[in-house]
Image (cartoon, rainbow, N blue to C red; front, side, top):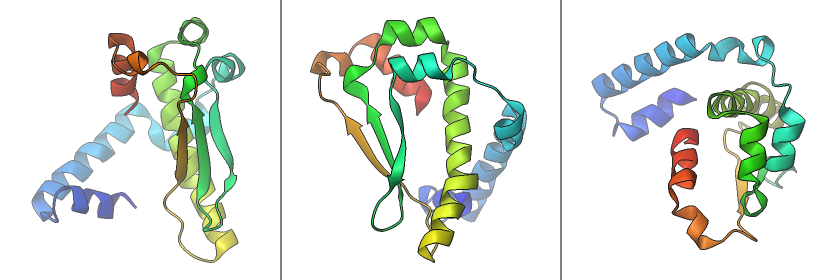
Length: 145
């Protein structure tokens, strides 16, 4: 799954893709990503979800997992009272691994073809445009992408 994405990103340059893939695999090992679904716990999940509602809500007609983030109702103060940036990043990694290891295979099986993309909605209702440009928002977006 990652190889094709890396090849596209590196314009099909095999050497650059190989370096990128090796760096990615080293990062996964250093961060413990391969076992994050079984080794890591997130007891603050309910408090984080209250402050930052998001998640999967079924599938599209094409079989893609349907992801919704309600960015317009994020309670930044509550979010950072419930957790910190490092744990939020790990939660993000965990959700991504869950998608790759559990959701994509289940959707592929259900729809009888390879599913490797999601359908996402970023709901900005209630979010002031200035929030997109302040330093704290930029830092959060940079850390999570």
